[in-house]
Length: 124
View (cartoon, rainbow, N blue to C red):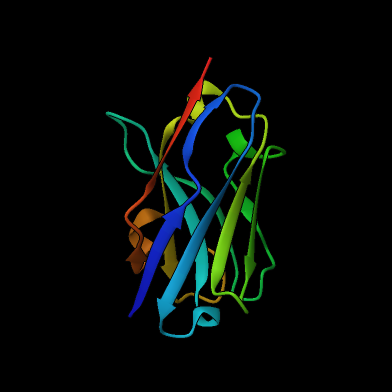
């Protein structure tokens, strides 16, 4: 089992930046592909970005390509989401998730472990 704790959320103006972190504990972090998802009020949880076990093969949903960057540091058991040029429509609770698959996957139901989420609010 792995425990995940997100941090770094907050309130930012449109055009600003935030860096989310997700610290993992428990089983070996490098066994897991990692993903970031988000859920806005009244909407389903959606895929944002994912990365494979070694930090390669990053995948992004179209709406964040060129603005968000996912990365990981296996020595620190942490995955990051750098978010630039934020828009009001990025407002959501952001979750990190762990998946034992070799390659990063895109669907909520494919992930095994989840953090509690961190709120990101972008004002216009």
